[in-house]
Each structure stands twice: as C-alpha cells, then as structure tokens.
Image (tube, rainbow, N blue to C red; front, side):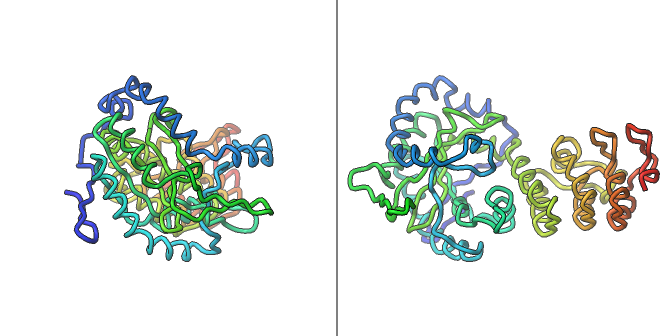
Length: 377
C-alpha cells in the first residue's frame, strides 16, 4: 500500500518484489528499441531546456580537466546561498507539501504513479555534500538539490516520455517565451520563476551498471527539487540491486577518512535497512555474514579499503562501527599489510586494540616483506 499524503492524496510505492537487474527492467519496459524510438523527442526536449549561451560561457571559464573533478557542473542549479545545512532544511520543509501535491497532480494527469519521499536524511545529505561540494573554506550546502525529491513511475518507456513532455510543459523552461532569466553585469546567473532547471536523460545514456531514469532539477517556490521519471520495473530494480550499495559506499568514502562517527553510523544504518542486517551473533571474524551490508564491506574492493583508512588515521570508534557491521580486520592491501599493520605502524594504540579485541585481527599475518604487525611495531 502507498502512503497517504496531506490532503488525502495517495502516493504509490513500488511493491516488494524479487530482485531484478537493470537489464531485465529495461526489457520489461520496452527494451532498447523503445528507448531508441524516443531519441528525437528526448533531444528536442534537451535542446529546449538547455541554456546554450550559459553553457558556452561557463565552459570557457573552466579548466580543461573540470570533468574529472568531484561534483562538477556546468548548469547553475544552485539553491539561494545558505551558510548552513539547517537553513537549507528549513526551506525544504516549507516546500515539501507543495512539491508533493504538484507531483501527485502531474502523475494523475499523465497516467503515472507518484512517490514523494520524506526529506533526504540530514546525515546522508551532510556526508554527500562534504564529499562532493567542499572546498578549502567549507561546504557549499546550496549545491544540494535533492533534499526534496520525488519520482513518477510509468508502465513503459513511451508512456514515460509522454509524461516528460507534460512535466516540462507544466514547469516551463528557461528558453520558453517570456523566460525568467536575468543576467547581472558581474556575470552571475539567477532565475526567479518555476521551471525545469536541469534535465539529464539517463535512458539515452545510462549510468554505469545500467541504471536509468529521466532526472530533472525543478524549481518549486524558489527551491530546487529533484524530480525523476522512470518505468516501474526500473524502480523495482533500483530497490533490489546495487544502487543502494553505491549510496552506502559514497557516504562511507566521505565519512571514514574524516573520522566522522555520526556520518559513519548513519551510512551503516542505511545499509542495514536497505541491504540487509549486519551480523549474526555479533561482529568480528568469527561471526557469520548474513546480510548484504556484510557482503559489501567484505567483498567490494573499494569498501575493503575503508578499514585500512580508519586504522591508518587512528579512528578507533569508526573502526569499531565498521567491524561490528561485518568488515574484516584481516583484509590485506597491495603490499600485504592488514589494518593492524597500519594501526601499529602509526602508533595508534586505541585503533590497534579495537582491531584485536573487536575485530579479532590475526597478529601473525605477514605482509609481502615477511613482516607481521608486531614486527612493524
């Protein structure tokens, strides 16, 4: 059953389903042929929504390697400047009911099923922003555009693109007649009215792994919100495939090196809720893995480096959280060093004891030089 929204509107949520991969989801929605048949319509909408003049100006100013940088964007879809995350959430809370009602109305008018989530968890938002939008002076909180977010799901690909046209017509674009764009003499770009501010067709060019959606950033009452259109099978695949693993890893990559215990706990909790429970009978090497989070922490190449990162920095509390969630204390890096090698070599007594006591680390493991952690010490 979906959840009732304020005012009695009904919000649909994907029903629990067996795991499905993205390739299967695409085929169930009509397949690649159905996507290809929409190429001309997609391109026409992209051309209508793209501020080509602005794009050209920005790219001229950016360094050649800008695409390799974290969180790069050539579309100015910033929120109004806000110095704190709390202030951004205050505005988001005001806008959410209005955005929800609009998404429900659009879904009902286009034959789709609406799903407007609660506000993005603040811990998750903070971890994402610190990872993608931080500079030497702080964090650009105003670049967070997915705190208020919603999805409209359609039965197949043609219906989804029909819905897209209606959504764009409803919100408008910067290139429409009487558009609201204002250029300031100092080069800054601002817009006041409601419109589709950014559109990415990720069916025409899917993400690594095959995930696809029609992703938009729309302005609703002066606040940037994320609106995604997709087919129902893809929504099921998103909930039952590796997309949640990606989200967990992204949060942990940002939080672990910084020793951000609050963010690490939030990421692991999110992983337990969406990937599976942590351990049967407690943490450490003797416990039996029973959930998807454990599999992620122990088998994903990138995830396995997190324990090394925490050990090298001496983040004992973070280490305990990772170990109790199923991470291995005995994983070896390219040199054969375990996290215990790193902790001992760094002189981190608390991290060393956490690895031995909580993680049950093997003190006899040798690296490629034949050295055990005790030799390192």
